[in-house]
Length: 113
Length: 113
Image (cartoon, rainbow over all chains, first blue to last red):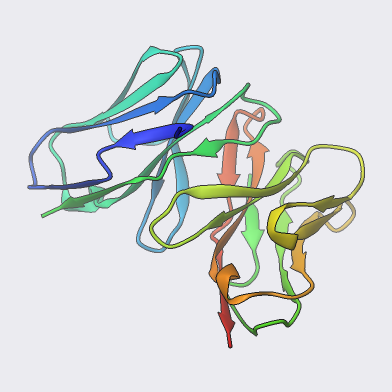
């Protein structure tokens, strides 16, 4: 029973397309995150939602739009995909946004060609 | 600046030898600190965490870490490594009013027979 699940696991698409990545957590957590891991394995936070409200919005192009329909879901929509968007995107969740660890999904490897 | 610094990008070690992976955090990062492990093509798994209390923290797979406030360090150690410990290891800390979980650049542990 996967705690944080993302779909799809792999996504190959052409430049200019629009795509979405879905994330669901069954841990009952109230905070969810999107992270981007580049080719050098560096992890950078993109967004964070607490109780469906956006609390962190890092310097991310506005082509990236997160949506949280409820506390258990946080989806990431990307418009007009560019080559530089190729990366592994991780969804994570935590109970609270202060002093707790985050639990991560398996990642979505996005390749833009 | 809010930062978590991992001092070694790669650490090669022979099987059954001890290992230490180094992590330092800036003063603007909270003392809520974590170590994660990432096996190839997988998500991040929590190894251990320091929130408060004893400065020596024990985690899974025989790993432990010591929180040192005066040196702003949180180094990870294992007395005897196995081939299966080969992975990427990330140190992380809470920042930005603790809403953000920020990561170091990662240390690649390569265990050789």
